[in-house]
Image 1: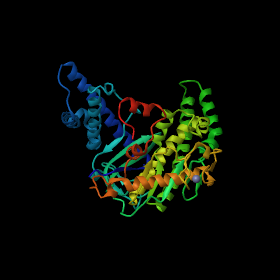
Image 2: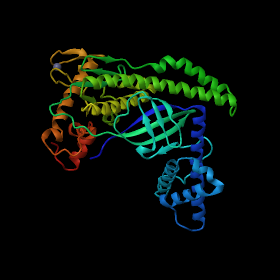
Image 3: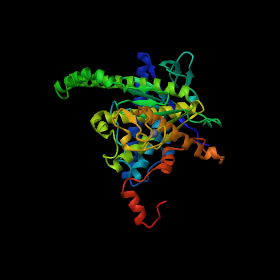
Image 4: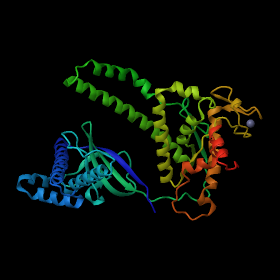
Length: 427
Ligand SMILES: [Zn+2]
């Protein structure tokens, strides 16, 4: 059974001495990378064949034993071997025409230190510290418990800070029998999300709040002379502002999704990949609210990311709690009456309001949509193979594309006509 892999990422707090050692380790890996490329080029020019990972590891042993490069032996060999593994992969991509020839790396282009085995590092969760090979214990900001079986460790440096990424394997949980979706979430622009619990979540305007400061920093970058030290500094400051905004956004989203996953094991959400596709296929006139989307302009891409990230978080958080996320086709969720099922554009007199032409049901448009998402989630959930007693191969809920394919209505005109002209009767 395929087991889901998850990563935990924490900031490390090395002492200056340890940070120096880490940089030295990373530098030695870079040296190994460059030296191996040099050797491969020499072989190539001599008309010899490419040497694979195993052969490169033998070179590495020789370099570590060579008195001239004996300093290489101060770095954990696993990390250097992983560098060669990455190099091999890079060559394979090149041979298959999927990438350029591997490049030499200059200073500051270190790819990080990877330790491929659980036993390579020690984790002391109680004291929030980690011990990589050939290093002492190092403090880290461990913001959450590491759950699952550790697979590997990667130490990377970003903007002068060190991070550890711990990949773990978590057993796949089969959602308990009898569970059904109990929360529907409608993602939107004016409201970030509306749920069937009646919750309306306004979008986070961290960007807006920090916009002024951001503009100032951007201006200060553009005023500095190109290539100057001050410009470099200003660019670093700009990077930190962006990073802070991203961190705020992430924190906000984590709080939301944790709250939802804690309260509801199975959650229905719109499959927004389908939404994006159908919106472009359908043109813009049929979908009310399109104007709002266009107006959102720049913010739209940020929102797209946030929706995708919310879904990702909900998926692993519900899975960790023995539940699941059910993605549903978002077509018509905004136009259908959650009380009687009547579907019409006219049900939406305004962006915010839903008023059913047929039964008179009236409520906030986003809450109405959330109810439709939940109802559609129910239909998808009971139709999934596991629920029908089919043998469970992968105990995951039906994926979006399957769910959507069943309900997908043909795009106006084109798709239906194509089916007819191909001589296949339309059901
Ligand atoms: Zn109605």
